[in-house]
Image (tube, rainbow, N blue to C red; front, side):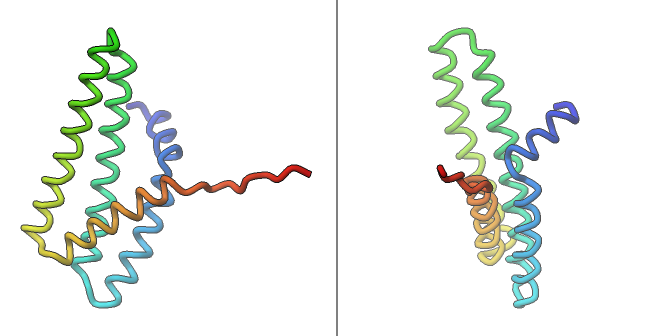
Length: 127
């Protein structure tokens, strides 16, 4: 990716705001006495960024697919692989760092994914 496309991806996937929300959440969780959960929050945001990068590359592959059948195979295979990789990485976090970090990582994923789905602009009402 070139720098303009990276900036465009950061803006369109709202990564800046997700990182800000994760920083505030990690600070609060860390101050409450759960340092591994705070670390897990950052791991969850990193997993979200990796997931977004994979989705972006999958979309580029689908746009370059020669026909409909190969596009369908790319979509199915990449979706299964992406979710399997995410599950394995979360399991690795849980096994190496413990339950607190696993819950924090799931929380980081939840924060970033929820932020992506929230609308930032208010709908305009007809006058």
